[in-house]
Image 1 (tube, rainbow, N blue to C red):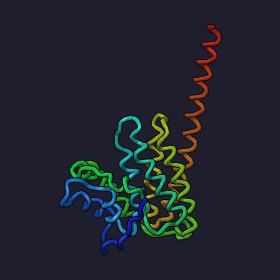
Image 2 (cartoon, helix red, strand yellow; image 1 turned 90 degrees about the horizontal axis):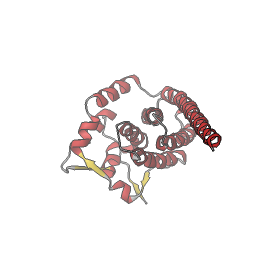
Image 3 (cartoon, rainbow, N blue to C red; image 1 turned 60 degrees about the vertical axis):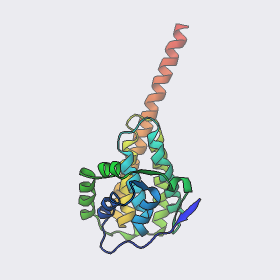
Image 4 (cartoon, rainbow, N blue to C red; image 1 turned 120 degrees about the horizontal axis):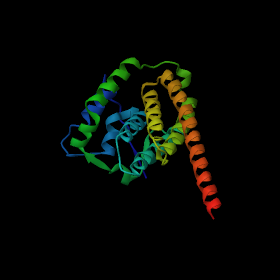
Length: 213
């Protein structure tokens, strides 16, 4: 495991500008270590946000777990109030082509982030302080577990909610924390309903098979 030194962000650089700039560089591959350094002191919230947004794209079965694992680790670090991002060396070496990154992060994604940033600002500090970060980190950890579950359409809601929390952490926006809390409740209700439906269906099939026998 290794800690990544977090450098202060460049002055007046918005989150959208950092995301866009990461798509341009000398190397054809963009590593996770470079992403961490690019976001500077906002690395925790920004990484959670970016990973959650990337998980919203279509991926083959099991692909969501690739994003849920680092989100869980980052969420735990947020909950224990680490000052630097701590990730395994092998995870920091993971990279994607800059061309693919530009395609995934450009267009509507950047426009959406810019629009949200324009509406977001530091407020309700009681919901973004150190104690609140512990709770937010714990909630994001649970949501990341939900993200990895093989539940029909059950990954979209947790991913979107995690992205809201990531924005809240980055912008220190207490209102976004409240919205994320509402999203968490919705995620919990949806998972319970789906699980209940699956149990009912399986029970019905088993009863039908027993009657046949």
